[in-house]
Length: 338
Ligand SMILES: [Zn+2]
Image 1 (tube, rainbow, N blue to C red):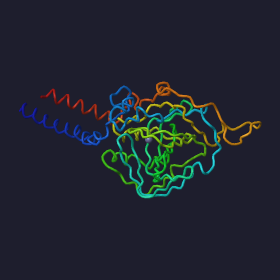
Image 2: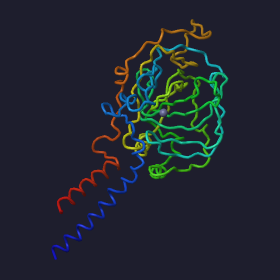
Image 3: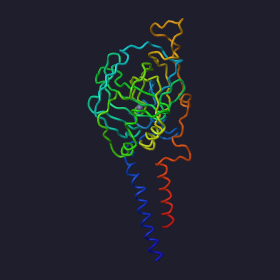
Image 4: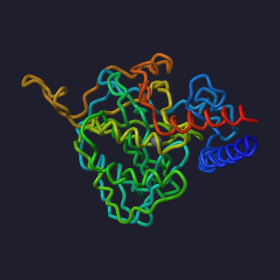
């Protein structure tokens, strides 16, 4: 009788173990394709080793024009913006949300419009998020950064990718991000989810003050020749929305931010005027205004600014952590009974 009862317990535990352990493993099977690199400091696959992991990723180590960088109002060339600097003409189009491994992305199918920078059209392809922000402004790394990726089809263009970036701090929920709600996030771990028609204009460009410089992709292969345009106005996002984004991506990418890279004497242009830059009545504002030249910053120094906060404070476990703990306990009981 005791033996039968023990066997029944054993079967139940095996079944529980199967449900709890193998289901997440199936989900994580996708992760194996993605985890060729990670974001952990000191990890063998971490940012400081990306350039050694593959020949095609050498730029991550040897590149002189890498991203992200620290943007500082003390190291910019101020320029009065004109329409030619950034012309946007987006169109609503069908979009799909997918887990790309290092980040969650919305990809537009067909023609979602373009931006024009100095006469060149860059067509809008996708947007994705990084937590915390990759770029810093005046020493502050914010809670979230959105990248809108655009590509030129002109083979003669040297800088063929243009990225618009928005930084966010914790506050009220972000309206555009509310499109990717809890239901969608729970599905996106295993498959692409069609969102229907999405208008990229809903991301909303809220000011005409921005920073611009030439850098690289912020993940391998770290290709250079990327025109970065970073909106100066920091927008808001709720803590729940940031946590939802972190839950949706693969474990290794919950903090998917590359450390700041050296400027190497690159010029950062600041377009438009913010309140803090507004000239006093005695100062003129005629054309570009030269500030002191850009100085190199060591990534070590700059990377330490505003270290990212843990995504889940102690005592407030995420569903992923709870599941892992529960699985661990089940395995222990199973081992004991055997
Ligand atoms: Zn990005």
